[in-house]
Length: 200
Image 1 (cartoon, rainbow, N blue to C red):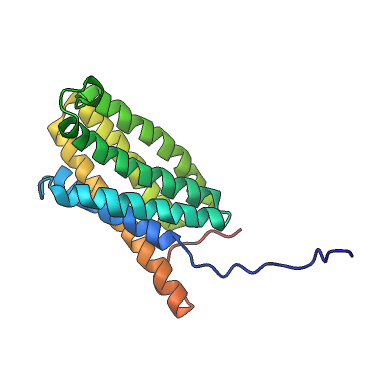
Image 2: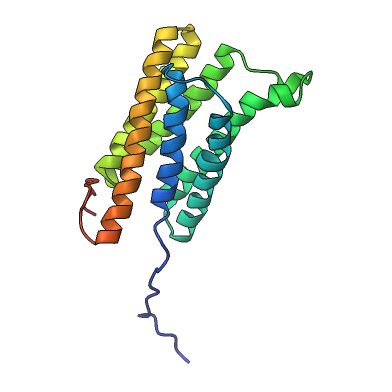
């Protein structure tokens, strides 16, 4: 019996990108309110980093895998893991006091951590030029944020750290905007908030 090769499977699963962008955006805004010295670092950021920036993004990444979206899979699982790793950097020195491997990083070590994420994000930014203008803004600001924070830690510059905070606020709010735009455009079946989708 010959199989029918013309049968197409219709994808009826929901779009996970708004969830991932929201998790990233909300957590990025909260942390950079602190970096910009508008608020202070508290357990609010730690909780958001684990559950919203971390777990919610990883769930979105797994959902993107099911939709055969390599960019979304890598972006959401990677940045979700970034948030969990960042929280680990903050809390491991207290949880494992005395352990050499769990000591708090010095500024140079933190700078290299951020620089590596900036390099990775640069590659992802190039990928956004085939997706949408909104994601170009999100990732463009993200690489600026990572490089600014890396410079701030390498040079121990207080003013650069504050500038990075304001860049981070723009990055976070642009991700929140993109999340809401994708949701509303799908719900209403038309462009309510533009995201500048690229033609394929």
